[in-house]
Length: 313
Image (cartoon, rainbow, N blue to C red; front, top):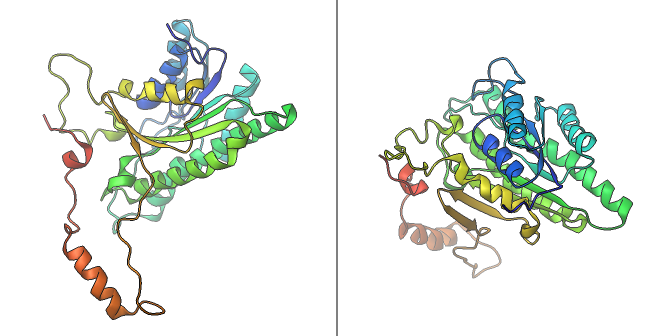
């Protein structure tokens, strides 16, 4: 069996369940020593008592198959706890090589009904949580690179969502956080490339407790085959992006699910208009923009199946 991550250490946040668990298991299968992070609160909205059990169970699952794993039950949205997570990886395995940011919560509400706390909490866990761990990992890699006078090995895989690409009416906080993660990733990719570090971001489609409402109408295979929405379809891409083979993959956004990987291009100009005068007037904008949009579909909401490319069972 190929072991491209042998000798490397990795952190996976939100790894007690769902996608994070599948990713931690895959990195371990590929040879990495894994720090399994999960705050352990049972509610997908971040509610309930924190528990070390989910992280410990996944770490034990890795050890039971002969792998190396350590559990960490800290909250990555807390700056100090994110520091302790990176320090744990370095003190346990001598260095950190791979960071997979996956931790998140949901507090869905339409924008006109959303409270300040519902907005803040989702931005804090998703966007700030990604920043916190990225910050301390990047400090570690930069210091090692400066000490050695050469690039080091570093991989960051962040988790965004098609909610930011296609829109999600009841998730303005989540969509905004996931869009921010893409911006954080591309900025990080540029900043850390000279140190030997790559940063990429994935938009996974997977059936987890976070997406149980989104995919409630999509039936699982009746024949017992692998669910197209199983997290196990996503984790191999994470393993690849963490590997030496992906050395030239940097600042990229990839959609992944059910045997499909799509590389998303950066936004392109769809149309361009130049004023015939020194600057645009209202009347001139009306004359060029209104016909342009009149010839296009309206602002209707895309059906979930159309956006996701899935069929309901």
